[in-house]
Image (tube, rainbow, N blue to C red; front, side):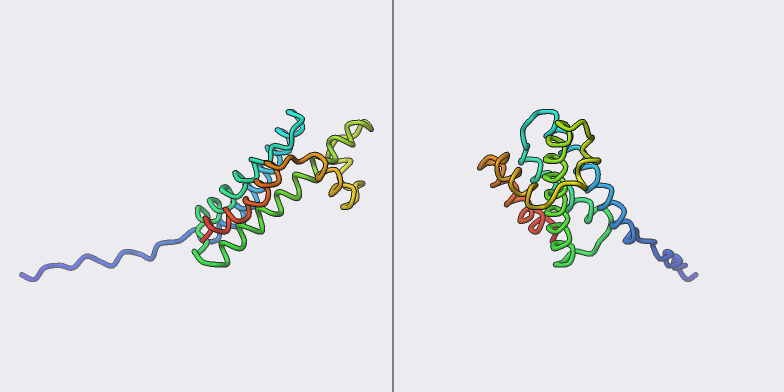
Length: 143
């Protein structure tokens, strides 16, 4: 009697198409959480940038994006984008609050130069260090 070979397993469906959705969801929730924390506490909470870098790299890995430089660069770029968005939302939250507007109402009315000036004034050295290290962390963890 000859041994019966088991049938080849069906090809697995990989979830490699999930990474854009997970990255967008993670970036949006991180921006909302970070901006809410900063507006509620009255501090910039720059350490949250490091968490944003961790989350970006993790969402790309969890979503099934192939390892390599594209994933690392996308994680770093997403971290930088979330950082800029949060700085913009926090500045517009403070200024818009004085005018009776919500942060999302004041954000389109603020210019980049004004946000840059307010962010330079509000961030401490530790915040700036965390903001600078976050994309590097995401680049390292995203590979």
